[in-house]
Image (tube, rainbow over all chains, first blue to last red; front, side):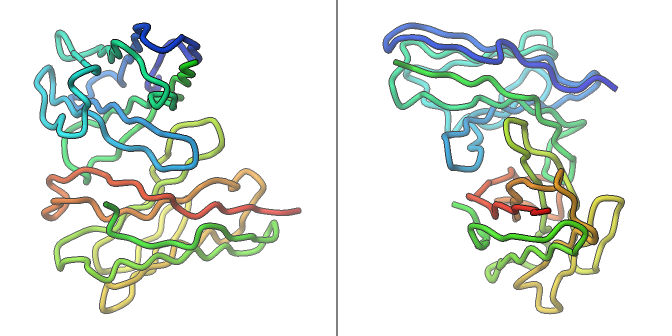
Length: 115
Length: 114
Protein backbone atom coordinates (compact mmCIF):
# COMPACT_ATOMS: atom_id res chain seq x y z
CA UNK A 1 0.00 0.00 0.00
CA UNK A 2 1.42 3.37 -1.01
CA UNK A 3 1.91 5.82 1.81
CA UNK A 4 1.21 9.52 2.08
CA UNK A 5 3.21 11.44 -0.50
CA UNK A 6 4.47 14.97 -0.02
CA UNK A 7 6.45 17.35 -2.18
CA UNK A 8 8.79 19.05 -2.20
CA UNK A 9 10.88 17.45 0.55
CA UNK A 10 12.89 20.60 1.12
CA UNK A 11 12.30 24.26 0.35
CA UNK A 12 14.35 27.35 1.08
CA UNK A 13 12.81 30.79 0.56
CA UNK A 14 13.33 34.33 1.72
CA UNK A 15 10.92 36.06 4.07
CA UNK A 16 7.91 37.66 2.41
CA UNK A 17 8.02 35.12 -0.44
CA UNK A 18 5.26 32.61 -1.07
CA UNK A 19 5.47 28.84 -0.92
CA UNK A 20 3.14 25.90 -1.52
CA UNK A 21 3.25 22.30 -0.35
CA UNK A 22 1.45 19.38 -1.91
CA UNK A 23 0.06 16.22 -0.30
CA UNK A 24 -1.42 13.07 -1.77
CA UNK A 25 -3.08 10.94 0.92
CA UNK A 26 -3.52 7.18 1.02
CA UNK A 27 -6.19 6.08 -1.43
CA UNK A 28 -9.61 5.88 0.17
CA UNK A 29 -8.73 8.02 3.19
CA UNK A 30 -11.43 10.61 3.74
CA UNK A 31 -9.64 12.65 6.38
CA UNK A 32 -6.53 14.72 5.73
CA UNK A 33 -4.47 16.71 8.20
CA UNK A 34 -1.71 19.32 7.95
CA UNK A 35 0.66 19.70 10.88
CA UNK A 36 3.48 22.12 11.59
CA UNK A 37 6.48 20.82 13.52
CA UNK A 38 9.00 23.35 14.80
CA UNK A 39 12.40 21.98 15.72
CA UNK A 40 12.38 20.35 19.15
CA UNK A 41 8.60 20.29 19.45
CA UNK A 42 5.84 17.87 18.65
CA UNK A 43 3.64 18.34 15.58
CA UNK A 44 0.87 20.93 15.87
CA UNK A 45 -2.36 20.51 13.93
CA UNK A 46 -3.02 23.34 11.49
CA UNK A 47 -6.07 22.11 9.61
CA UNK A 48 -8.22 19.00 9.21
CA UNK A 49 -10.31 18.11 6.17
CA UNK A 50 -13.08 15.56 5.93
CA UNK A 51 -13.37 14.85 2.20
CA UNK A 52 -13.18 18.37 0.75
CA UNK A 53 -14.69 20.17 3.74
CA UNK A 54 -12.80 21.82 6.59
CA UNK A 55 -13.47 20.23 10.00
CA UNK A 56 -11.02 22.21 12.13
CA UNK A 57 -8.80 25.14 11.17
CA UNK A 58 -8.71 26.84 14.55
CA UNK A 59 -4.88 26.75 14.70
CA UNK A 60 -4.31 27.93 11.13
CA UNK A 61 -2.90 31.49 10.91
CA UNK A 62 -5.42 32.55 8.32
CA UNK A 63 -3.80 35.90 7.57
CA UNK A 64 -0.95 34.10 5.81
CA UNK A 65 -1.78 30.38 5.60
CA UNK A 66 -4.38 28.81 3.34
CA UNK A 67 -5.20 25.23 2.43
CA UNK A 68 -7.53 23.50 0.07
CA UNK A 69 -8.52 19.98 -0.80
CA UNK A 70 -10.26 20.04 -4.12
CA UNK A 71 -12.17 16.90 -5.10
CA UNK A 72 -11.49 15.43 -1.67
CA UNK A 73 -8.16 13.85 -2.58
CA UNK A 74 -4.96 15.90 -2.97
CA UNK A 75 -4.33 18.94 -0.83
CA UNK A 76 -2.14 22.02 -0.98
CA UNK A 77 -0.98 24.24 1.87
CA UNK A 78 0.18 27.74 1.02
CA UNK A 79 2.03 30.40 2.98
CA UNK A 80 1.91 33.96 1.69
CA UNK A 81 3.93 35.88 2.76
CA UNK A 82 6.34 33.72 4.74
CA UNK A 83 7.92 34.84 8.00
CA UNK A 84 11.09 33.63 9.68
CA UNK A 85 9.05 31.83 12.35
CA UNK A 86 7.40 29.68 9.66
CA UNK A 87 10.63 27.67 9.39
CA UNK A 88 9.48 24.16 10.28
CA UNK A 89 8.62 20.74 8.92
CA UNK A 90 5.12 20.59 7.44
CA UNK A 91 3.59 17.16 7.82
CA UNK A 92 0.59 15.80 6.00
CA UNK A 93 -1.35 12.86 7.43
CA UNK A 94 -4.44 10.94 6.40
CA UNK A 95 -6.85 8.54 8.04
CA UNK A 96 -9.75 6.41 6.88
CA UNK A 97 -12.17 8.58 8.82
CA UNK A 98 -12.13 11.35 11.39
CA UNK A 99 -11.57 10.89 15.10
CA UNK A 100 -8.52 9.83 16.99
CA UNK A 101 -9.68 6.20 16.92
CA UNK A 102 -8.60 6.09 13.32
CA UNK A 103 -4.87 5.64 12.94
CA UNK A 104 -3.22 8.57 11.22
CA UNK A 105 -0.63 7.82 8.56
CA UNK A 106 1.99 10.52 8.14
CA UNK A 107 4.01 11.53 5.13
CA UNK A 108 7.75 12.30 5.30
CA UNK A 109 7.14 16.04 5.57
CA UNK A 110 8.45 19.14 3.82
CA UNK A 111 11.26 20.98 5.56
CA UNK A 112 10.84 24.73 5.05
CA UNK A 113 13.64 27.17 5.77
CA UNK A 114 12.78 30.88 5.66
CA UNK A 115 15.82 33.17 5.44
CA UNK B 1 -2.04 21.86 25.55
CA UNK B 2 -1.08 18.22 25.88
CA UNK B 3 -2.81 16.33 28.69
CA UNK B 4 0.18 14.08 29.31
CA UNK B 5 3.62 14.38 30.88
CA UNK B 6 6.62 12.28 29.87
CA UNK B 7 10.31 12.28 30.76
CA UNK B 8 12.29 14.17 28.11
CA UNK B 9 14.77 11.38 27.48
CA UNK B 10 15.63 7.77 28.29
CA UNK B 11 18.36 5.31 27.39
CA UNK B 12 17.98 1.58 26.85
CA UNK B 13 20.46 -1.17 26.04
CA UNK B 14 19.90 -3.05 22.80
CA UNK B 15 17.99 -6.28 23.38
CA UNK B 16 16.57 -5.15 26.69
CA UNK B 17 13.02 -4.04 27.37
CA UNK B 18 12.33 -0.32 27.06
CA UNK B 19 9.69 0.94 29.49
CA UNK B 20 8.40 4.41 28.67
CA UNK B 21 6.19 6.03 31.33
CA UNK B 22 3.43 8.56 30.82
CA UNK B 23 1.28 10.47 33.31
CA UNK B 24 -2.26 11.50 32.37
CA UNK B 25 -3.80 12.28 35.75
CA UNK B 26 -6.70 14.33 34.31
CA UNK B 27 -7.88 11.66 31.89
CA UNK B 28 -11.64 11.11 31.74
CA UNK B 29 -13.33 7.74 31.92
CA UNK B 30 -13.95 7.39 28.20
CA UNK B 31 -10.72 8.92 26.88
CA UNK B 32 -8.18 6.70 25.18
CA UNK B 33 -4.40 6.78 25.49
CA UNK B 34 -2.47 6.71 22.21
CA UNK B 35 1.22 6.20 21.50
CA UNK B 36 3.00 7.35 18.38
CA UNK B 37 6.71 7.48 17.66
CA UNK B 38 8.82 9.58 15.33
CA UNK B 39 12.09 8.34 13.95
CA UNK B 40 14.52 11.04 12.90
CA UNK B 41 13.53 12.81 9.65
CA UNK B 42 10.32 10.80 9.32
CA UNK B 43 6.68 11.48 10.11
CA UNK B 44 5.13 10.05 13.28
CA UNK B 45 4.02 6.42 13.27
CA UNK B 46 1.13 4.91 15.21
CA UNK B 47 2.13 2.28 17.77
CA UNK B 48 -0.81 1.34 19.97
CA UNK B 49 -3.78 2.69 21.90
CA UNK B 50 -5.90 1.58 24.86
CA UNK B 51 -8.73 2.52 27.18
CA UNK B 52 -8.67 0.40 30.33
CA UNK B 53 -7.26 -3.01 29.59
CA UNK B 54 -3.66 -3.75 28.76
CA UNK B 55 -3.04 -4.02 25.05
CA UNK B 56 -0.42 -5.81 22.97
CA UNK B 57 0.39 -5.82 19.29
CA UNK B 58 3.35 -6.73 17.13
CA UNK B 59 5.17 -3.53 18.03
CA UNK B 60 4.62 -3.04 21.75
CA UNK B 61 2.57 -3.55 24.89
CA UNK B 62 0.59 -0.88 26.70
CA UNK B 63 0.03 -1.17 30.43
CA UNK B 64 -2.57 1.20 31.90
CA UNK B 65 -2.90 1.52 35.68
CA UNK B 66 -6.21 0.66 37.29
CA UNK B 67 -6.94 4.32 38.10
CA UNK B 68 -5.95 5.18 34.50
CA UNK B 69 -3.80 8.08 35.64
CA UNK B 70 -0.65 6.67 34.11
CA UNK B 71 0.52 4.16 31.55
CA UNK B 72 3.70 2.48 30.35
CA UNK B 73 4.67 1.60 26.81
CA UNK B 74 6.87 -1.48 26.67
CA UNK B 75 9.13 -2.39 23.77
CA UNK B 76 10.06 -5.94 24.80
CA UNK B 77 13.36 -6.27 22.94
CA UNK B 78 14.59 -2.84 21.88
CA UNK B 79 16.73 -2.55 18.76
CA UNK B 80 18.77 0.33 17.41
CA UNK B 81 15.92 1.05 14.99
CA UNK B 82 13.66 1.82 17.94
CA UNK B 83 15.64 4.98 18.64
CA UNK B 84 13.00 7.70 18.25
CA UNK B 85 10.83 10.24 20.03
CA UNK B 86 7.82 8.54 21.63
CA UNK B 87 4.61 10.52 22.12
CA UNK B 88 1.92 9.63 24.64
CA UNK B 89 -1.34 11.33 23.66
CA UNK B 90 -4.78 11.74 25.17
CA UNK B 91 -6.78 13.36 22.39
CA UNK B 92 -8.60 16.57 23.19
CA UNK B 93 -12.34 16.28 22.94
CA UNK B 94 -12.17 12.55 22.40
CA UNK B 95 -15.42 10.81 23.21
CA UNK B 96 -14.74 7.12 23.06
CA UNK B 97 -12.38 7.61 20.15
CA UNK B 98 -15.08 8.85 17.85
CA UNK B 99 -13.74 12.36 17.70
CA UNK B 100 -10.93 14.45 19.00
CA UNK B 101 -7.59 15.51 17.62
CA UNK B 102 -4.09 14.39 18.50
CA UNK B 103 -2.23 16.95 20.61
CA UNK B 104 1.47 16.15 20.57
CA UNK B 105 3.69 17.21 23.46
CA UNK B 106 7.48 17.01 23.31
CA UNK B 107 7.54 13.27 23.95
CA UNK B 108 10.36 11.09 25.27
CA UNK B 109 13.52 10.74 23.23
CA UNK B 110 14.51 7.08 23.52
CA UNK B 111 18.10 6.23 22.68
CA UNK B 112 18.83 2.53 22.23
CA UNK B 113 22.52 1.87 22.67
CA UNK B 114 24.58 -1.13 21.51
